[in-house]
Structure formats: structure tokens, C-alpha cells
Amino acid sequence: MEVLRFFIHYGLHLIFPGLIAWLFFRENWRKVWLILVFTMLIDLDHLLAIPIFDPHRCSINFHPLHTYLAGIAYISLLFLNRTRVLAIGLLFHLLTDAIDCLWL
Ligand SMILES: [Zn+2]
Image (cartoon, rainbow, N blue to C red; front, top):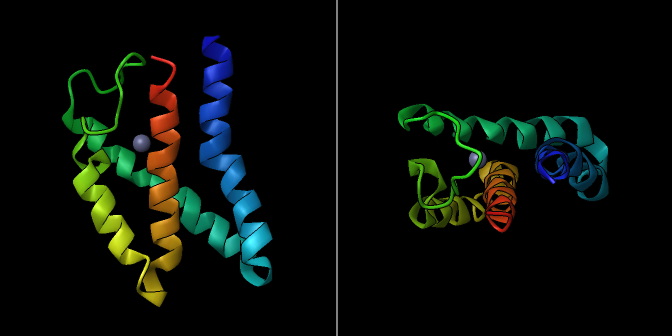
């Protein structure tokens, strides 16, 4: 079960963004994929937590960049052309982490 969870989580964090990029941003899907994967950097907020990694903890509303408030900020980025892809990545990241919470 843990292994399945691991593959679903990192599949959604790494592989699925590639699919989104390829389907919706065909002309520059590599660059878009890179930006989407880059949003994993918000996991740096885990460094503020003790312990840094806990497989039985739900990230959503625990880590500062994984709160509903952060989500609202990410949604607002959707409205700017320059940050739209980044916003998609950030919101998809939150969704992926939220799915992870369903296993707990
Ligand atoms: Zn995360």
C-alpha cells in the first residue's frame, strides 16, 4: 500500500504534469513541464516542520505554503498571463498533496 501511495504521489508530482504540458501547451511543453515540476519547491516549507518528513501527516493546512490561504494566492496568479502556468502547477501540487491525505 505504501509503495502504491508513493508511486501515485510522485507520478502526480512528476509524470502527470508532463501530460498536462503536452496536452495543453504542445508548442513548448518541455518548458511548461519544467515550470510545473519546479512548483515542488514549495515543499521547502517542510523544512520548517519537525520532523521534516512524516508520511502520516497531511501537508494541507499544516505547512505555510500548503494552506487554503496560500491556495487563494495561487488562484489569483491564474489571472496573470505571466504566472498562469506557475499557478496551475502550484494548485496541482496542492491537489496532489490533498489526494495523499486521503490515504491517512
Ligand atoms: Zn507539497
